[in-house]
Structure formats: C-alpha cells, structure tokens
Image (cartoon, one colour):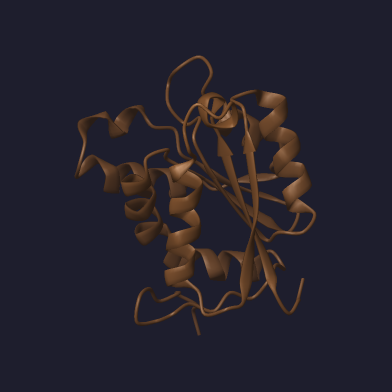
Length: 175
C-alpha cells in the first residue's frame, strides 16, 4: 500500500458524541497527536459511530479498505455498551495483546481505574487496529508508549510506510 498521501483511520465510538450531545474531543486528540508524530503526508479518514457492535465493526471493515493504521477511541471500558474490543476482535486475524498491556501499564501511573480498561490491538489483512482509551489526555499517554512499535508493525503486515518526526517520537525498526 504505497500512496502519495496516506490515509489513517480514526474511529470514535460514542453514543452521545454521535448524537451531537457533545463534541468528539477524543477523535480530535488522536488527529492532533498524529500531526506531531508523523513526517509522512497523511490525512485522517474519520468516522463517528454509536456504541453498537455492528456500527463499530462495519466502520472498521470500511476503513481497512484504505487505511493501514486505524486508531479507535471509546468503548473500551467495562460498561455494557462498551464493545469496541469485541468488534475489533471479531474481524482480526491476529490479536496483539502487548499493546493493551503496555497502555494499561502506562495509564496505571495516573489512575487506579486503568485496570478496568480493555484497550487492545489486532491485525485485519494489511491494517493494524489499535483501541485507545476515551479521554484525550489518556490517548496521548498511551500513544506515546505504543507508537514507537506501530510503523514497524505496519511494515511487517505490508502496509504503508510511516516516517516519524524523530524530534517528537522515534519509530523502532530493527536493522
């Protein structure tokens, strides 16, 4: 997947934001963080859906047709309507539990309720899907932790080449 301008999927799962009750600050936080991280020319393929399994699943499938990286926010807690990890897992051929383990570990430095979070990541065809938490501050903290591994993971699955702004964050690619 080599294009001039790379598409990166940003998916927010939120009943209230999708109904216009409040602004989606979490999706914006992902986009703002990626603007700092990436030197590669990219644009967001943004989706805002309700907390419904099928809405999330079909948005992921649609985004995977054009995005090597899909970052989700919302729906990773223990509440009944939090089903983003289940929707992600339902389509992925491989799950990558290390992403969730590291994100929870980082978040535990700030809040004891991080153990309730169910962030995860998986591979669907040539796309890496990473389920991030729902709070903008937590999104940045978690992305700071896991992003160094993301470009190489995408290389390994045959996705787009992502070049990072090394003054902000350095991608790890073994020699």
